[in-house]
Length: 114
Image: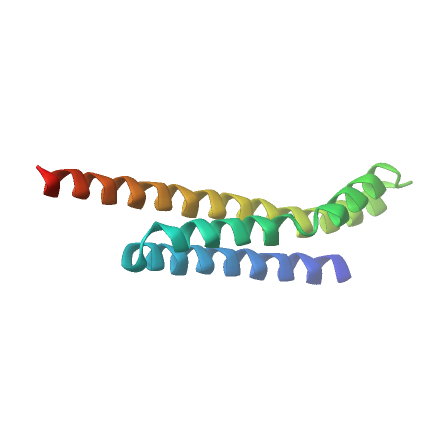
């Protein structure tokens, strides 16, 4: 049961990353690309924090004796891996939005000079 509770918490954390990406995208549109770069960097750090737990649970899954214990450990692995991958993908999306905003800002400057 603990593995399923942890998997649910991982899905909630994934939703938090998605919400932070949406909020960061709105900030990029209003305040400029710098806040998006900072937000993307912080999201990468937050997403990579549980990497040690991921390797530990993954190693325990391969050292498990039976299929039930292996499935239990793989549930823990998924509970850590899903929010990590979601956080990394969301931070890349926010980074892409920041680069696009920076490019748009440069194009506007070039148009106004001419």
